[in-house]
Every structure is written in structure tokens, then in C-alpha cells.
Image 1 (tube, rainbow, N blue to C red):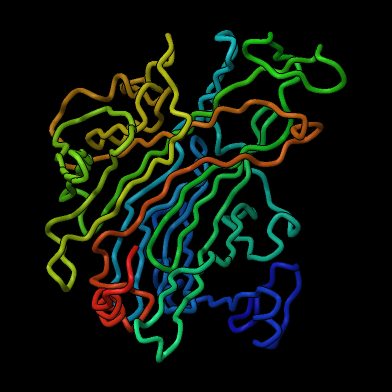
Image 2 (cartoon, helix red, strand yellow):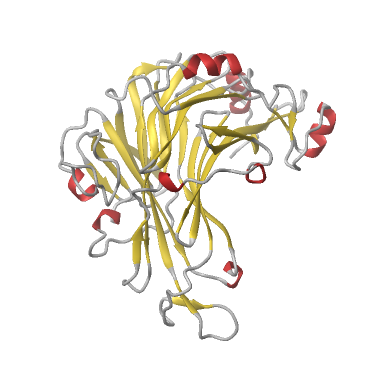
Length: 417
């Protein structure tokens, strides 16, 4: 795609900015020179990708399609407008898709060999973006709108309202496994946030039937009772933030006493497996890398796991949805790991070893209760995580008003929220 053209969600290109604004199109910027320079730093088998947003922020990364896990991102770098570049991720990929059915008898692991089934994309699969190739057309890269990034008003209203639409770089590959086709997706946004997710579509397994306690009747009458099931999806993520050996992971908890709320940050210093719960979250920082306000750069981690799975015999690795281990390159999959001379699952990886180079294993679960609309072909159902910058910039990187905006809002006695 030529830089300066307008990218439209209606599947065609317009040349005028005014028409683009009316039709919901985005200007597409491709930093070709930067991509060439950056590409020289990607490892063997990896390919460079660089995109710059309207706001001036930029993502650069290396990507590969690994035979075992599929789409793998490495050396993922974010640059805020007029700011230093941060390597935020050293490496990230899916680590397992566990699909247990509610009858307790059926279930499967969709890895290894996930990446070896990644399919070639057609132009119709990526109508608004560009198909990136590693010798095969595998990765769709699209600049998309992301609603309002911020909106605020001056307390005097003299200078009117202020708002900024967001933009994201949307990346995905497609992998069929049995009856499902998985869309392996990363959404990297202009504010430095990241959202890995997986969409599952295709057809319900026709032979997996149940009873009134674990299934839903589909089709005419009540005879064809399709089993409900979980999709437990794991990611293996290694942050960098300047140095993957200088990271600190904290569990953030919120306790209430009357109307007062106390926030506590508890450092996790050894290999640990934990579950998400109400009033708990996690934060990863590098206290040796500071922003211009002398605050540690980092990310908040949100598992968005409303359907947390419970451990069952044979799938104890799925009991926890945040696991942190010391980096051991042979530990690639959350379960069903086939690397020689290495553990088989997360159960084997967690040994209370001191953390000097942490690896995060993050699980998101979705309970799929079949519905009439799932036939003959179901729409994609999505699940995933979010990583939100904390201290990566000293102020909002998308507005030059920065502190002035927040100071103005704070000074108004009439505004609450």
C-alpha cells in the first residue's frame, strides 16, 4: 500500500481527506525506511513490521509463524510521539488451547502443531489492510479506529470540547483445527496498549451430544443436544521494558473498610501460580527504567477472565490463570509440552524458583453454551487479555496539552467523577 492513501472499511480507497472522514476511513502510514532498518535486527525466520499512527506514535516488531504455536511476536517496540522508543515485549505467543467438554469425557489440546496449520490469507480475508508474507501470505495488518481515545472539556468551556479518536494496528492469522477456525489476533494501539485475543468460529462438533444438564437442543425439537464446553486459552509472554532481567511483578489488591479503600502491592519474587479474583490485578514494572517524572515504566495486566475454569483430573494446569515462572526456553506450552528433557505442563514448571527473568503464562477462559445462531456456521466468539501502559510516558502521549488538561480539570470545583 502506498503511504498517504486512505484506508476504508467499505473495501475501497478514497483520495480525499474530507470523504475519508465521512466514511470512517483511516490514513495509512507505512514507515518503509524504518522498517528496513528495524528488519535487520529480527532473527532468522522473523520478519519486520512497522506502522505509524496519525498521533505520531509507532509500533515496530518482528513476527514469525512458528510450527508449534503459530504467530509469534518478538522485539515489540513502542514509540510515543516525540519520545524514546521502548522495547515492551521480548517475545509473546499462544501457549495452548484446551477445549474440555462439560460431560467430562471429551476434550482436547490444540497444540503442538498449531502453527503448521496456519492458512494462507486471501484478499477477501484482509479487505482493509495489507497481507504480510514470510514466503506465504499469512498475516493481515490493518489500521483500525478504536473509538474515542479521550474526551474532556475546559472548566470554563471557553475553548470548547477536546477529543481524540484512537487508532490501533490489528494483526491476525487464521488456523483451522478440527471443527473450529481460530483467529489469532494482536491489537496494538496508539497509546501503547496491547490486546491479545483469539476468536473461534466454524461448526459445532456434530457427534458431541449431552443431556439436559450439560447441553442445549439445537435444530427442530429437543433431540439434538449439543454439548457445552470451555475454551481455555493460554499465552506465554515475556516482557522486556528495557531489560527482561530487571522486572518486578506485583499483585495489586484492594480492601475496603467502611467507605475507605486501601490498595496494596505485593511483590511476586518466586515462581507462583494464582487465580484472578475480585479486587485483584497485576502490574509489571522495571524500576531501573524511569520516565521523565522518575516513575518506573510498566504495564497493568487485565485477564478479563469472567469464565474462570476449575481444575479437573488430568487438567490441573488449567486451575490457575496467571502463572509466573523463571525463563526456561524449553518450556513452550502450558500443557502437552513435547520439548525433550523438559516438563510437560505448568504443573512441572512451578518450583518456587527465584525469579530473575520472569515468563508470564496467562489464561483466558470462555464457556461456550451453544445457541440456535451457532448453526450451520457460528460467528466468532472472542476472548483475550489487555496490557495497559503504566508510566511508559510521563503524561498522555496522545495530546500536547498533557498536564495542562489534567490541571484544568482538577482545579474545577464543579466537576466530579
